Amino acid sequence: MPKLKTNRGARKRFRITGSGKIRRNHAGMNHILTKKTTKRKRNLRKAGPVESPDVRRVRRMITG
Image (cartoon, rainbow, N blue to C red; front, side, top):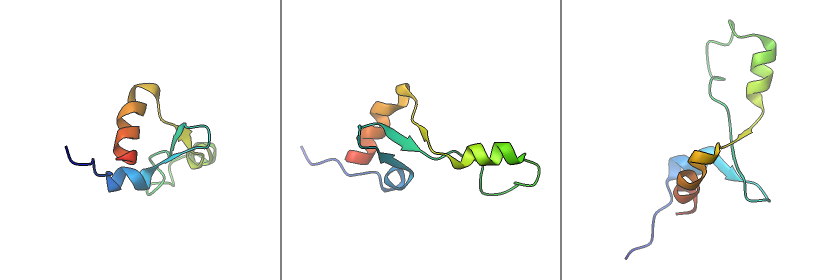
């Protein structure tokens, strides 16, 4: 069976922390920012964890 290829789109969007968790950036920070509050935009800047149901699928995409 051939090796699995890394999903290059997923590779650019997710990264693995030192402890093995997967980090992701929040959506909604590219446009239409004027109607969003400063607090909301500030919280969107911070990276968050991938939720547990998706971890297995994301890990498989990024490790290949």
